[in-house]
Length: 166
Image (cartoon, rainbow, N blue to C red):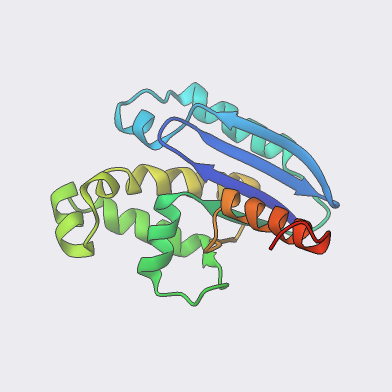
């Protein structure tokens, strides 16, 4: 497989693409949840992301998305999926449509979302759905452990092997 790591934040979306066992690119786009809420993302921004995805995310292997960030973690939690099982693109589209039909206050009440999550979850889903559609990706994995935690854990295991860690 090839892998597209998608990290959606408030100000930007970071994409990291691995194919054939190599890092192919790492790009940042000024499309984030807060920027979307404040109408700071133009059609040109979306076009740049779409064009980048279509021309740079090619692989002879199927592409698997790996998502990180509080929003995709919350969607995964709400989905009641078992750990290690992916979220299908169609499910993300359904959540986007469902959440969009409610006000922020209703999202807080119905889904027990925190206020700072209830407003940004819709634009986050919009970003994930677009990236996956443009990359021809059908599902996204949501690791329980974050990237920074994973790197620290990996470094710790390496040090243990060398006898340098307790």
